[in-house]
Length: 178
Image 1 (cartoon, helix red, strand yellow):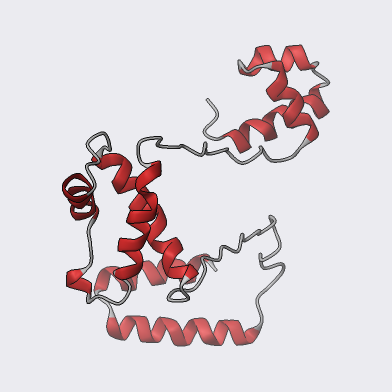
Image 2: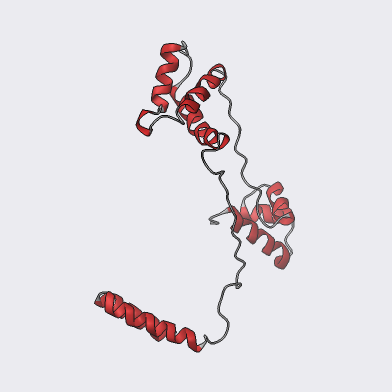
């Protein structure tokens, strides 16, 4: 059984290339739709999953109120800020929002609180840098340099001084394998 969709794509591409199997044969072999096989043959990695943008029709009229509370909390001390429970209670008491569920308020507050902090310049924007490490790019080829041996010997000496007997045996095995 294939663990991930990326591995499935790899297997499909390999069998198509080396085995010369048709789209229908590949779909039958892996138990997937032919559309997925065609996608695997056209691209190396699967498309990222789409997350649906859910709307809460009952919460729509109160989003401005919640945003106002969250903006006011930016200047409040940490212990005095509104929680999602408190915001839901205030909506029920002050704004007659009887049809609004706590879960909808909780999800909206969890999503909007960081966005409001970024909009007001109080927090850095989230940055994600995808890292790509092709196979073999960072592997050592050939014999290590003598400086590496000296560094390993120095490290082994320090490890022996600081760690227990179990670690020492592990380091000895590690040194023997190098």
